[in-house]
Length: 434
Ligand code: NAD
Ligand code: UGA
Image (cartoon, rainbow, N blue to C red; front, side, top):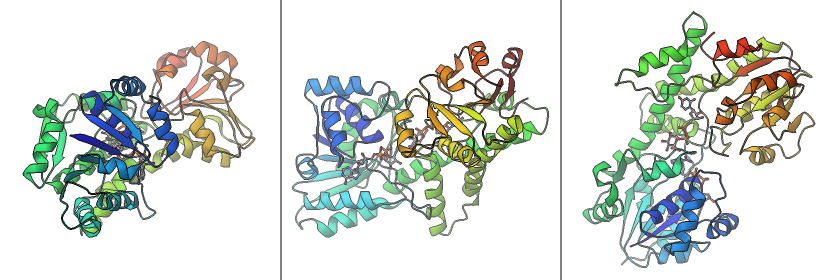
């Protein structure tokens, strides 16, 4: 059985390398030649811990390859994992242009029975559209099945998430497709849940939106803590000790970013509304999340009053640690707001600087890029923590204090112990705790 991975972005590149690691014969394809060129040489176009090692080992073993030729890739493979992007449209719904485009190409190249697997995050009932598109354009005598196999990996720990999954969800509508999918995931048969396709599609969107809800919920509680003497960290700890609640995804702060939660919660809202279901619960979670940026900027203003002509050190640009991804990153929203107010910014991130430079190609004179957190902090009136990289937890705060103009920290991720930072002589602001 030969596996094709169509679209070698964050999900596709990791999936291709990991399927090969599981012993399958894999070919990855993409429309961007630079991605394929790099992948063929064992280089990942993204920063993802452990990925390049896997690419190199499996390219060497000979069971992993990459090609720009989508037609040939489809023709030579038995199972096609569709991992293309499904970005958000202006109205909040998911843009299915790329999925549809690939479906047509699959139809045109359907030379034998194949299983077409949606791995991209798609609205419920997408499989019906994929099936229809392939049926419309394929030769009459050729057969295929559609399956859903949503992906749950997190950026920054994608390889280990893929190779040590909590669960594998497979949605199928024929025994033949079911047997093939079970064979691919044989190693994980104890964690495999087989459902119909609509259910598998719903599981993905419902999971992401539930986690986003959880984050917005703790951020709401955090606002309540700020108005009282409560401490959100301890509140989250106390809540999380209840196994029914669990301790994960209860970190208050700047809110969720990334290419998934913001778009997926909106896509699910749209799907629900189109089906006549009131989705206000999800809309409120989205609203709370968007408001986190205002709350953060207000904290900066509370600390240094007027932002115009102030120097602000910004530590952390990626949407979360251990990735260079800045899609929907809170950092970009905060930076834009601070620039509008006339502040000058010195930015630092361990991995995401090059991507941020692309967002501000005409680098405004207000922005400079620092080589270290200490350089960013030089002569700054305030230092912001936007992403909780371990490197920032381990900062020598005495050194930071020496180089700053004013010893003020506004921490968007609650990475420091308030009492300790204040003992060092800093004025310190964080979320949901005094
Ligand atoms: P991405 O933009 O990094 O990757 C998508 C890739 O598909 C790109 O490299 C693009 O060039 C390629 N592509 C587009 N059209 C193509 C075509 N016709 N033929 C071949 N390649 C084509 O996106 P991503 O972050 O990998 O996400 C992909 C999907 O997986 C989305 O639906 C997303 O919601 C979902 N998902 C993402 C994550 C994550 O952590 N990033 C996790 C789970 C699920
Ligand atoms: C998320 C899900 O965790 C994955 O299971 C899913 O596969 C993926 O979306 C997807 O569908 O694309 P990811 O976006 O990579 O993964 O990262 P997370 O670790 O979930 O973090 C998302 C955002 O939530 C980050 O901005 C993070 O800072 C924020 N977050 C997370 C909080 O603000 N508080 C928390 O307690 C946890």
